[in-house]
Length: 71
Image (cartoon, rainbow, N blue to C red):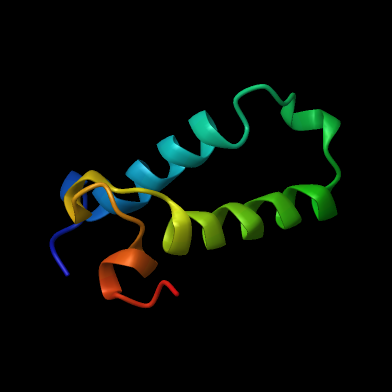
């Protein structure tokens, strides 16, 4: 853990927030969704982000393909 106010601590979550806002909620008015709908959409996006989304750092493969688990 670094000192208070170190911006590098937030880099990973800030990147995730940017991705979810631009990929999942780009065309949605935030106040038009119920809490349940928002939670469902975030959960679906997190599964997509962690398992299916192509990533440059993995040679444009999904994490599942990179680990060799794709059937």
